[in-house]
Amino acid sequence: MATVLSVSGSPSASSRTNRLLRHLDQRLLAQGHEVIPLDVRTVPAEALLGADLRHPAITEATELFAQADGVVVGTPVYKASYSGVLKALLDLLPQYALIGKTVLPLATGGSTAHVLAIDYALRPVLSSMGAGHIVQGWFTLDKDITVHEDGSLTVAPAAGEALAQVVDQFSAALSRTPLLAAAS
Ligand SMILES: Cc1cc2nc3c(=O)[nH]c(=O)nc-3n(C[C@H](O)[C@H](O)[C@H](O)COP(=O)(O)O)c2cc1C
Image (cartoon, rainbow, N blue to C red; front, side, top):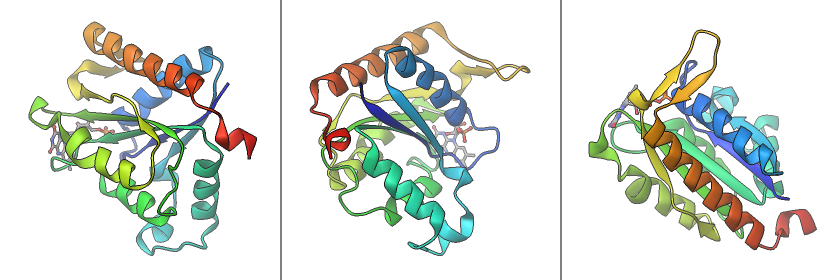
């Protein structure tokens, strides 16, 4: 099975995007994939904002991308686009860090007015980084994600079904793709 890097691009300590990705990780794990979570907010700010390519956290993130067969990229919509911290990390990766990889773009947002942020803002960046196959992404409204006091998460039924479908399409695409990272 594939190695999946699951990247949450929210700077928020109580991030819904982060919780949603960790929730979806469980579905990929159940399908036999190895899933490695990466929360961009845990990368030291001085490395991100100082563009410190030699910082161990940046080196480690670069290696995680290199080892992955597939990458889930999740972001909150901020100002009609993806988050600044996600861009800060992507900027420090090699130009073709996504070459040959299957990518699932996901976003959470407060308004359906910005549902196209995935396709107009995030997808072109992923494509410019060489992503071999960017599968259908999904935008989830923040009001459809409920985080409970015990830390568990509930997704509204229609949104949950749509997310399960795009995750399964991503999983199927991974199964069809030669696992270049694992073979190298
Ligand atoms: C600074 C900021 C800007 C935002 N801008 C937008 C926006 O332009 N469009 C939108 O639909 N939601 C916007 N939102 C709402 C967030 O995208 C939404 O609540 C998201 O689920 C937050 O994810 P997070 O908890 O992972 O940070 C914004 C939220 C913040 C804090």
